[in-house]
Structures are given as C-alpha cells and as structure tokens.
Amino acid sequence: MASVPTSPIGLRRAGQASVAHADLPVRADILVIGGGLIGLSIAWRLAEAGRSVTVLERETLGAGASLAATGMLAPAAEHEPGSDLLLPLALESLRRWPAFRDALQAASGIGIDYRTDGTLVVAVGRDEVERLRFRYELQRRSGVAAEWVSGAEIRRREPMLRPTVTAGIACPLDHQVDPRLVMAALATAAARAGVTIVERAPVSALDWAGGRVIGARTEAGVVAAETVILATGAWSGEGGLLPEALSLPVRPIKGQSLALRTARRTGTLSGMVWTEQVHLAPKSDGHLIVGATVEDCGFRDGVTAGGLYALLEGARRVLPGVEEMEVEAVWSGYRPTSDDDAPIIDALAPGLIVATGHHRNGYLLNPATADAVTALVTEGALPDFARAFDLGRFRETNGIRATA
Image (cartoon, rainbow, N blue to C red; front, side, top):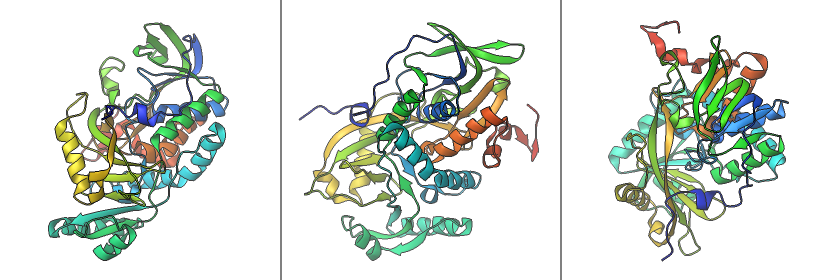
C-alpha cells in the first residue's frame, strides 16, 4: 500500500505555481505578515491597486489553514444560533465571489473549480430531524435560501446516500471551490502583479516609532513599510508581536480531514452533503473531501486514530460507498477562531491593520475581507459591510463600548 501523506500539501499543492525565495526587501509600501488565503488575497488586490507589496510567511504558503480547508462557500448551511452578526457579511462576500473568481482566474490563468451545486444538510433518526428542523426555522426567519426536503427527495438528488437519511435542508445558493487551486491561483496572480513573497520568514517583532508601526523585524533583517497588515491566522493571538492593549482574542481550533479517491465502482456525490458529524465535498478531480474534526487543543500537531475514525465513521453512516474508496491523504490544520467566531478586520494603530479570526469561514469571507482591507488602506475607512468586525466589539460591557 502506498504511504499516506499526513498533510494536504502533496495532494492539494500539485500544479501550484512555484514562488521563488526572494532576498528580503528593505522597504515596501505594504507589508503583509501571513501568506495564507487572506494575506495573499489582500496582497494581490493592493498590488493591483498600484501598491508595492511584500508578503512574509512564517512557513510555506497556505500552511496554516488555507490548504487544510474544504473550500465551502456556504452561508446558508453555516447559519446557526449565535451567528446573526456574521450572516450579512457572509451573504455580502458570497455575492462578491463570482467577480473575485473571474478576476483571479483571468490574472492567474488557473481555474479554481468553482461549483454551484448547493449543499444538502441531512439528518438520520428522529433526534437529528428535530434539531435540523430547528435550524431550518432559524434559516427561514433569517431569510437565507433553504428548502425542507424529505428523505425520498434527498435520495433522488443523491442516490448514493443510505435509506436511513430521513430528512434534510437544501441550500441551493451555497457554493464551493478547491482550496489547492485557489492558493495556486493567488500565488501566481500575486507574483504577476509584482508582489514579493518570502517564505520561511517568521516575524519576531513589529517596528514602532512615535506610536506608529513602521515595519517588521525578522532574523534576516528589517522591512520598513508604510502599512503593516497582520493576516497571521491561528497565530494572531500569540504573544510577542502586539502590546497587551492590542492583544487579539484569537486561538487555534484544530481540524483533521481526509481525501478519498472515488471511482466508477464507488460512486460519489453530486454536491456537498453535511451531517451532524462531518461534511462531504466532492471535487471535480475525483476527490471526496471529508472534514473536519473540531479540537480546542492548541497547536497540537498531527493526525490521530480517533480523529480519522470519527471522520470515516461519520461519512460511512450516510454514504456506504466510502468503504471502497482509497484514502489518498490525511491532514490537520488550525482554524483561526475569535471569541465570537467572527473575523477581526480593523486598524489597530497608525500603520497597523489586522485581518484574522475567520474560524471555518475563511474561503467564504475572503472576497469581502480583501475588499474591506483594500478600502481601508486606499480610502482610509472600512466599508459599511465590515464596520461591525472591529476589535472594539470585544470591549463592550453592558451594551456600552469601552474605549481602546
């Protein structure tokens, strides 16, 4: 049996345009710290706007969460109690995705497997049906596109599912992308736009002068910048870079996932299927992605037997064909999760902007985040759709916002 990679990199970076290591520049208009989905998207947009941009990545592009994600753009399926703050931003970002897709594919020459199949959220057994009905009523009250469907209708749409699937919600406007291809396209588009990308260049400290951030320090030297953008994902809450008054309430939530290779004899799904245990996302290259565990365990690396068992059993519970599918890759990653599971997009100090805390919605929220940060840099203010996501919301007490 072939060895199974414990990372998505071998599977999901195949075909990615190579990014040459560059000598550390002395100065840039914009310095983006973090070479994941959010950081690269912001860098590309700002470079297209005529700015000189450098990206510093502590490891390799997408190594934190971006290449470990499933690529779901699913505001309806994701909507659940407590996410009312996030829903308008999620819907706005989904509205922006087609234009973002077209621009990215044109700039890179790489298709990103943008699929509009929708999501089926399914239930097995009476208890799950009751919980799913509660979610459906919440979706209806919130105005998202959702339809209650019977077990028979679900199996008509997805005949490979087990007969024990008894009810579900169809979310026809949910979409998905392939993260491997999105990251490849972003790396290529950013490079073509003139972005300097330096991998394996962790930042040890920010440079301050007169209360303003003027650059960042690495082992290889200092990069001076007019504006520094922190897009460091799950590492955003780690101490060292920011003073205590600007500390970010962000922590890593580990997720384990796997890729199955489908074949004619195994069958596959026509669109995304969610259960209470797992989500299943078919990709156009024949992979079926099964994700993801939710583990609040800090930066505990690696894949566990318990995590893989939970994923496979959760998938097998609704899709018997997984038993015949080849396991092609398994991996883990870290979701950047804020205290309210919503992103933080804000100017923290003169010369310092942050874009982090996207939890499991990084791909969904990416176009809106990139556009919001670009507007903040070029126009000096966040657009209306992003103004609720500043750091100040975590300082509210009894409904009164405290000053920073």
